[in-house]
Length: 99
Image (cartoon, rainbow, N blue to C red; front, side, top):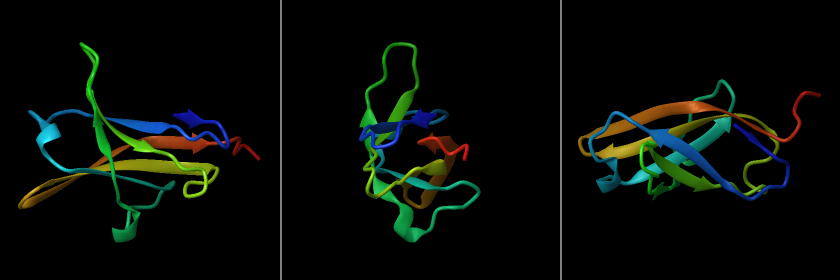
């Protein structure tokens, strides 16, 4: 996924393989590439209703002041006590990071 510099927009992450995850609290973490999220990286996200035939997505509004330009990895976390499910999503490039 590519996001333009300064753009305040939602980051969408597909969540598949669970019967109905919308009954679970959802959080997202966007961390520098090749890092794993720490406790303070998790932020409450929301569910986006899917269009017919498309997967359910978790959504997090990207704030340029909090997530600056760079290369990132996105994660979704679902709390299904006693389970704490962490799903890696994929890479995000914000801004022109090609140097």
